[in-house]
Length: 284
Image (cartoon, rainbow, N blue to C red):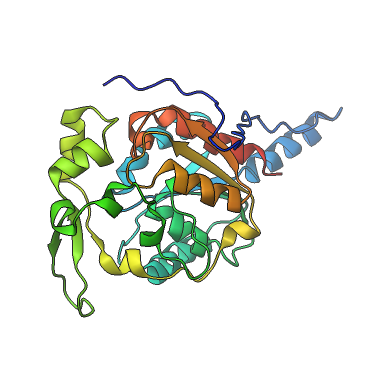
């Protein structure tokens, strides 16, 4: 399936889609050549590190396209393994990694990864921008499960038709690890991805626990950190309406992508990369 063209548009209910083109940070050129070299070196040292957090039923490879494009543009990029076990501990895992990075950070999350970055960024002063990619951005007390939207396939469907549920060691009472069923993954979750690739992604998906989806968010880092929101109009997992509501609440810079799916980051990484670069360009 050919990827739809990325473009800026207006979101329903008068939601303005804002896309800021990425710019290259250039040090002022002094007369002294040696001083120029030092200034250029300082500019390179303060260039943000981009940290990417994957969502449920995925892994770090879901960001491969963005990593390739961002590295080509000269950025240091890290994709972090998200345990997908419990929102509180998943966020702490990411937070501890963030603490090892010197200099400014642009932190991006896809899907459930949006809930994780919302909590992980709290109190980490060098996180300068958040990027939500077809993601949840919960307020304190909200769970990820509450944010899929009324018309989401996860809301409308019966659990037995959506998931293969399996037990796991030391699981709390009633908790399960969930795998998306093949038809749901291929036709709903990854509908913008070529079918053979989508089937491979289904076969290699990582399970997410029911606890992860049902843990209330403790923090809402988007209240104090500028944010960008990439919304695919074809997302059937977290609906555009739900994402739009969260984006407006966070006063995010919003991009509506026409078409796509919940895995637009896989089917059209260039579109997602442009939004990440927009966030990077804001970091001084």
